[in-house]
Amino acid sequence: MTRNRLDIPSRDALMARQRLVLDHFHDEVAQDWDATLSTFPHPHYEIVPTLTVHDGESAVRGYYHDTRVAFPDQHHEIIELRHSADAVVVEFWLLGTHRGPLGPIPPTNGRFRVRMTAYFLFDENENLVCERIYFDQLSMLKQLMAGLNWKNPATWLRALRALRGVAALSAEPDSGLLLTKVPEDLAHGTDRPSPR
Image 1: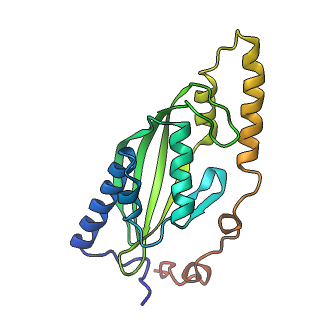
Image 2: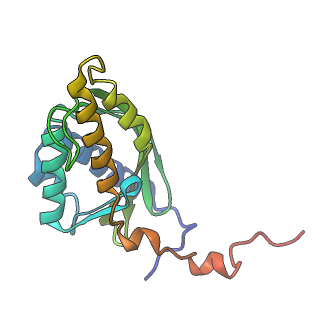
Image 3: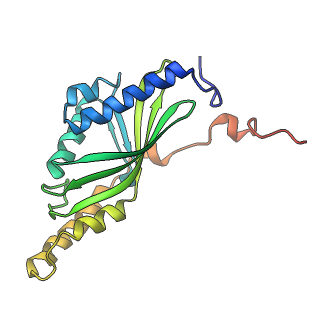
């Protein structure tokens, strides 16, 4: 049975979702990957700014590994948590220091504090099926580059490699994030308010 987009679950269901999401956040900061992965029946992340998808336990563990090599002190500050018919939406600050390579981007030792939004999507059986993350990648990059010593000529080479690395991160976008379609009930106007 498919849930209608306007049907809000019971308070108990919303509270269970909220507990799961807060546990997920806590376990990520603690870098307890087994506990974090246990919040999903099938781990799935969508990182919208880079148009990348990490699907399945192995891919998500790789994502966790790579981001914590780059930002070993990564943590968050929750701003707000909201509920919808099929999601928990969390606004938060993500913080960290760029100590290791982030894929092709060499470490800059810059600190970042970027405002983000994560949509934790649930299916009709109340299973977490996706974490979809939105943030301003340029704000993060500007802060990371601020950690470079621009008076040192070697910085220019590192900055060039960092910019090339950023370009390489989005070189092959995931088609699932590009080939979107309007939900059927919205495409046919069935959710439009009736005329008065």
